[in-house]
Every structure is written in C-alpha cells, then in structure tokens.
Length: 450
Image (cartoon, rainbow, N blue to C red; front, side, top):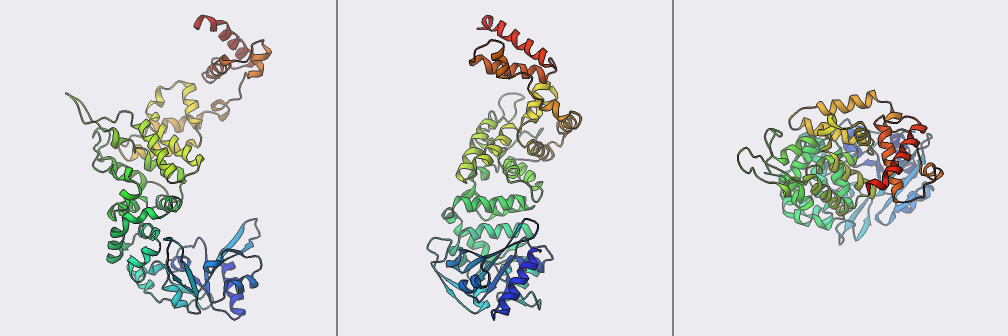
C-alpha cells in the first residue's frame, strides 16, 4: 500500500465514524504543485482518544498536542506512518516551540489559522478533491510567495525556527518572502538562539540538501540569520583569494558556487563538508607581501578542521558525522598532490572512509574556481583501473606472525607492520614469504637505527 492510499483509508474510516477528515499541510501544497509528497498528514475533529479507538496500533507520541501517529506495515517490510491531528487552537508558547495548552475544535478554519505559512495551511478532501483555503494559500502558491499567517511577529514568537523554515521554503520553491514576513525575520533574527541546536542543525541540513542551497544561504544572509547561525560562514564575505587560482572572487562567492552544485538528496556530511571546507580561510588570511607575493592562507586546512569540529559540536552532530565532516575539510587539499603520490600513499588516500564524498568535494572545488579537473580525472582513472584487492589488499604479515618468528610484542611491532604494508602497496613484496623476509630484515636493522 502506498502512503497516499494509507492516508486516504484513514480519512475514510474517520468519516465512516462520523468525523471530519482532510489531508492538511505540506502534502496538500505538494499535490497542488504537482509534486509527490514525502509524507501525509490528516486533520480531523476526532479527539486523540477517538483516533486511538479507531486505530488501536497508533502511537500517542504527541497526544497532549492532539497528534496521534497511525502506523501500518506496508507489506514490503517498511512501516507506513500518518500523523492525525485534532483541529485545535494553540494557547501560549512559553518554550518558543510547543503550545502551553491546546483547545480542541470542530472547525477546520480555526485549525488553519494556527499554522505557520499560508501555503502550508490548505486542507484537501481526498474523496471530493475539494480544497479548503481559509488563509489565501492558493493565491500565494500561484504568486510564488511565502507569507506568515496573520501577524508574522506572532507566528515567529510561537516558534523561532519558523524563520529558518521560511527561508528553506522560499529557496526550495524559488519563491519570494512576503515583505512583512521578511521584515519580521530581520527583526527577530537575534532571537534564533532560543531554538535548540538539534532543530537548527536539521533545518540547515535540509537547506543544504534539497537542491537549492545557494539561494537558501543567500536568503539566510539577506535576512540576517546567517551571522547568528553560522558567523564563521558570514565572515567569508569580502575575504579575497589569489585570482590565478580563484577567478570567481572571494571565499563567500566560491562557497556559494560550491553549494549551488550540491545535488538534491546528497548526504548531509558531503553538504556540510562542502560548506565548511574553506572555513579556515578568513582567520588565516594574509595579504600579498613583497614583490611577486600573493594572498596566502597558511595552515587554513588545520585551522578549518578544528573550526569544523567545533561547529559540529555546537550543532550536536553525531560523532560519526563530525568525524566525516572534519575529514572532508582536512583532506580537501591533498588532491593537488595525487599525480606525485607514491602508490602506497595514493592507495591509502582513496581508502579514506566514504571516499566518494572526498572526490565529489574536490570536483565541486575545482569547478567553482579554476575549472581544472585533471587530478579529479586522474583519481577516477586510478579507481577504475585498479582492482579493489590491490587498493585494500589482505595483510601478508600479522602480529602473530612476528611472534612466531621469535619477536616479543613491543613498540616496534606497529612500525614493522606498517612498513611491510607500505612495501606491499608499493609492489616491493607480493607474497607471504617475501613479506616475512622483509620483516626480518627490519628487525635486524632496528638496533642500528636507534
């Protein structure tokens, strides 16, 4: 069963029980735009208790706010989920996210007026296809406008994250932000820090990965949200770069061009790695010095890696995501050396975790600056021509082998094993016998190298 068919069935069962039931929110917006909704929400006058009685397998994850999640096995091992929300009005938002209390209603119009933006407050009867529009959402869809419902300052006071969501929707749909809504975002931008780091991280990640990252970050800058959310990115503006390597302009322009190239649906770690890859340039900028001198960013990779790690910690990224994002920043300049790398060094380089992300970052970096993709193509040819077992061969010698040769475990073990693998990757040894002989030679030489 499809997600839409499941949502339609929920509406039928609610109506059969004497209740009103409509598709609501983003799914209606996407249907009217001819897009396939990612998920479906249902609005009804049934109370949470009545919804649970009709759907015993439901989850009461948001019952105190009138929201029940109805679930069912789709038949292919996946689980279908539809949020069913009771018509309501919200009273007070002391925590800047959740209503202090809700008042249930039998009016879909009252429910529409509590929502965030007009294009997200439409209701659709899935049987008759009638659209209920109490807030002018259809007109705004036709005009391409993101407009807060009612007084923008009231909507943003209820949940400050709505300011970033306005930017995301405007970027994703290539819409304009209505003037009073835009002005309210500018006014309340300093209060965005009231939102949890996790929610900000997730919304920024959506901006980066929905296929309209450049417009999203331009809007974050125009609404003055960017210096509040990511001051390190805002500081890229006006930081000049050597024109022979970066004819496109300053670090900000280069970064915008790179995130513009991010494909919709790309991984969050690639997206953040691209955004942060040059974050170390503003603090390491050095103007030209002396005849023939040029702008320099000495140690910007090392500085940028530390900054990227700090940003990830601030936004509560997982340890795994933080490590990958930092690795993308730390390794992005290594591609300039690939033609001169020893075979062992190149093989270890392409063995980096999720190397496809490193390669794509490099492609975007080159395409957004000097335009030369020679090293990108060099690595692609190497990966295509080199069998995986040569890139990541099974070790010919282990620590147990060294013990069996009569050597006591100690600090030298690691160095010998690394040296044997280096010889293996460079093609100096190819059999177990050759590797053991090579290892023995290293132990014999060790006293003379102390």
